[in-house]
Length: 260
Image 1 (cartoon, rainbow, N blue to C red):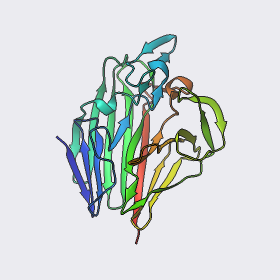
Image 2: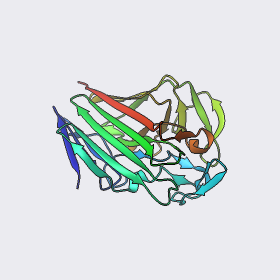
Image 3: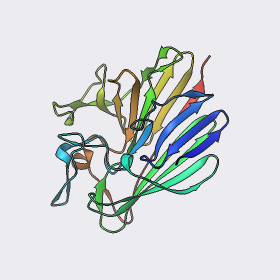
Image 4: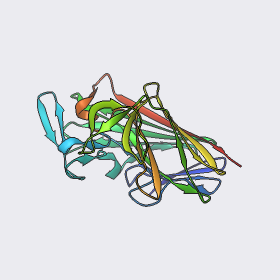
């Protein structure tokens, strides 16, 4: 079961049965996202990227998560869960997902997908049913590298790059941006702002009020631009507490214009 949205010449498919991912984004009939059950654009929640050794600290307590990407835990549970529809129109749909075991604290995640003729906005909220807990949230889109026979060009101006250690986690040292290929986190304190240009076809701008973005372009088929509320392993190094009066809220907007 999936949910279809449309506006102008744009069609979006949300697969709520498979992680509430955007499984298709078609503009004037052209697909922008890599296809397949692991791809599209999926929410990362309740953490983003790699969690070191699958462990996180909540006060004095250490919780162990399953190691689905040994030696780490990767991208949270939301991408593999069945989400519940919570209302839809032709251009907007909402979905919910409850945090359950092995996550130690009950809570709820809500994702809202809003489509316009020239933009797609994704909004996610994480709330607790009781005790506070650290969490992260973000998105992992797999944009096709090639459209119309031309490879995508990536443009962005980060304030820094997180140095990546041998364990693929940030070391805590901030360095100047290095050339790709990347599997790296960048800091953009004024908000994420990355432009993807497929020459002669389309320009797409990924923005977010969040200040962290991971760029991954080490596979031939796709390029990933991942806005998120903290760096990889940030649930340990830069924890953001979800409390009964202060939920975690993040959003990203993709805006496009046709070229040629």
